[in-house]
Every structure is written in structure tokens, then in C-alpha cells.
Length: 397
Image 1 (cartoon, rainbow, N blue to C red):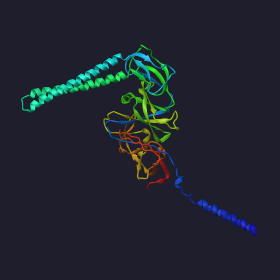
Image 2 (image 1 turned 45 degrees about the vertical axis):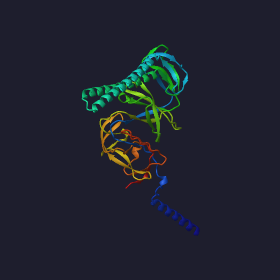
Image 3 (image 1 turned 135 degrees about the vertical axis):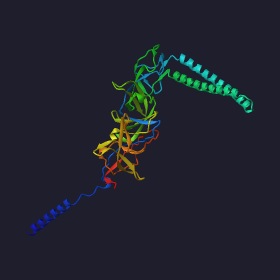
Image 4 (image 1 turned 45 degrees about the horizontal axis):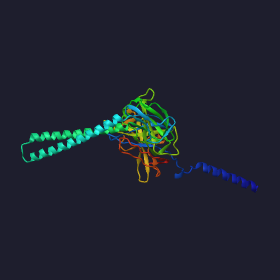
């Protein structure tokens, strides 16, 4: 019977331990076991004036077809590339007959030289009359005439300088250059053919390098030009910012819309880049703003029974920790670039734009040391991108 007693006591011990374990709470997760979530935010500014930042959604792609044309009208003199040719960046591919542009350039050079000589003589005459006037001679009328003549001569110099700059630019535009390393797909013009400014002369295909196409309204398009510097962000890489530039602007709207395709090429590469990635392109636009506003993406604004709100991230320590706060906001009109916030936000605050559904008041977040801080205060709206590690188990009191 001793054997059976031992077995019975052992079973009772196991049951007791099981009940004890069931009644105990599981141990709290350590910091290494806490959930890590990527959260993206946009730092917003409200300053008004000139130099506003505007962001547009786009999709990455490669092998982009671009139509090239002369920026001035004229007669085609030479065609230096044919379909199938590969061309280098800034390689000349066609020329216009430039005699008239060259003659006008020389004419403006002579006009500026004459204006400068006249202004020099007028200034010398004014100084002489001024010297006599200072000797108490009654020459007020002569002094006024000499001053007006000198001012008119200076104005003529400024006008002649502008005309000369225009002449130089137009003369330069008689040469058509490839904007980047590409392959000629089609040639639409022939030698001795008359062409208008902007008329397509070549179709080129530029591949391999990642580009992003965005759509922009005509009203904003006037503030954008080829070579315009931009910032590019990808949803798949929220911790990184890419630099880019505008390489082409469409002459015709997209379909039945009133928006035009603007092509941006990245200056940097990354092995994670590939076609069909969702992107956001930020432009600094030289345009006046009637009144200071704060614009936020529509995805940053939530609404519940208490009203409309956003989440912001407050930095609370120097070692990279922050706290999520909910802000009630008053919303104005919907614009192409986002929603106007009339009240509830301050310039410079960080508004969360991704990971929205996982947030709550008081959630502790961290700014990783390996992340980079990209910040520009040249406009009313500035992006700052971080990968925020949200510690699901931490709550601020």
C-alpha cells in the first residue's frame, strides 16, 4: 500500500501546483518583449508669406518616357541623334538655326554698352552741377534736370541688362540637350522644319533610376520648373528621406482632369527601392499666402462622438523619449494639399500621420538614434520623418 500512497500524494501535489499556477498572473513583459510599431508624423509650421511647402502623392516607376522640345521657336538646323541612340546627360541632340538669335544677342550687348556709357556721362554731368550748386550758385533748376537725366540713364542700364539676359537665354535654348542619360525612342522633326516653342521634337526613354510621378494643378504648376529640388518620402521606408529634382513637366493635362504630370527623379539609390511604391513628394513653392495657415494631411484627422482630433508627439526627455497627446481641433476648408486647421495646433508641433489606429493618449514613444532628422523651416509646412518605437506597455501618468 505504500506505493499507492506515494502515487496519490504525488498526484495531489501536481493538482495543487496546477491550481496555484492558474491563479497567478503571467509575468509582465520585459522591455525587450514590448511591441515595436513604426509611426510616421509630419512636423507642421504656419508662417504665411513666400516659400510654402506642398506635398503630393505619387508612385515610383522606372523606364520613363519623356517628350523633349525646344524652348524657343525657329527652324531645325541639325539633328544629331536618331531613334535607338543612347545619349548622355547634357548631350546635344539637335540645333535650331541661330543666326537671328545671335544677331539679337550682339545687338543687346551693344545696347548695354551704350546705356552704360550714357549713364556714366550723365552721372559725371550731375556731379559737376552738384558741385556748382554746393558753391551757392543759383542752379536749382539745372540740378533737378541733371538728377532726372542721371536716374533715367540708370534705368536704361537696368532695362538693357534684362534684355541682354533674355537674349543670352534664348540663344542657349537653340540647342536641345538630353536632360539625363536616356535612349532616343522617336524623332518628330526634320532638318529645315519650323517648330514652335514647346513642340515635341524627340521622345526619349530614361530607365533604371527610380522616378516618381505626381499630378499638380495648373495654378501650382507655374511655381515649378525643370531642375526644381524636392524631397521624397516612401511609405515602405518611413525613416528615410530622399532628394530629387523635377525632370519633366507635361504639356497636356492627365485625361479629363485639370492636373498635369510632373516627373521627379531621385538623386540617391537604395536597394529597397522598386517600381509601384507609394510615395510623397514635397515641393517648396515660391507663392504668396494670403494668411498664415496650418495644413495637415486628411489621414491625420480623426473624428468621434467628442469631435475632430489629431494625435501629436511631445518630446519630454533628452534621451529620445516622447508622449502621444490627443488634440481637439477645429477644421477649415479642404485644399489640394490637406485640411486647414483653424485652432488646436501650434506651429512646429508633430502630427501623427500613420499608425493612427494604434495610438492613445499618454502612449510613450521613442526616437531611435539611427533615424535621421530632416527638417526645413523655409516654408509653412515642413516634414520631419522618424521611425517611432511605440512601447505598448508604457503609459504616461
